[in-house]
Length: 258
Image 1 (cartoon, helix red, strand yellow):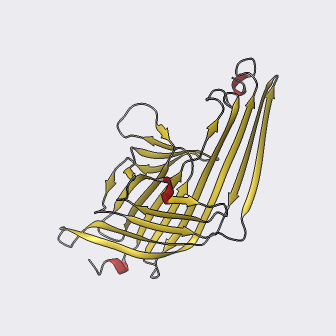
Image 2 (cartoon, one colour):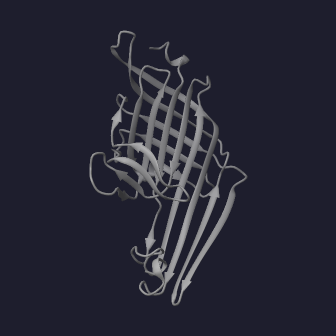
Image 3 (cartoon, one colour):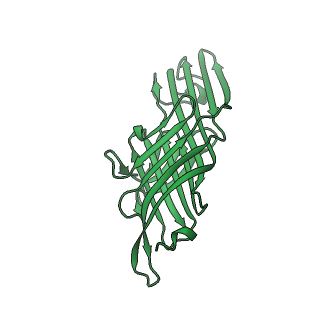
């Protein structure tokens, strides 16, 4: 098995979701909701990395929003909750593959004001649990529901999994701002969105895991992976919205006013 790893290409896909923080003056309803103020912050990180030999490749992705899960084999709509999600799948030219999805403490993943970021994940740490179902990221700009995979299962891994990633800031951050206004009689709604992107941010890290491999006779054997990684491409961004609704929630204004 030691001879397999140097010639193998191992793809590791990580999804980290940091839920947006929300404060609302009222509940849902209508196109803009009930009167009051609602704010939400979403975070995104991506990196394509590989080891010094180019044999081990890592795709790391983070998306911010309320975590939404759909359990397999159950009726009813998906369920949503704020939190942080990590998802890792491993495969390639090795006689094994691994996948797992975890909900983790928020402190394991941070995005700073200069859009540098870090992830320090340990699957055996306190507060880490398997995802309760198929993971969806909701509330993201333009993309709507984004399938992240999962099902609340862990397959192909033996023991714990560790992943450390660091995204550095860059001198060229992209900033944009959008404003939407709606009115009908006494009903007024204002929505402001801000987007900041750290495109091309350098990233580095390491991954440590053990896959359930098989020898040439089909017997199960452990396949350890422990490599240092540098990025070929990476990105970190944040997206925030601030919505203020004033006026009645019923009347003749249709869906925007109730």
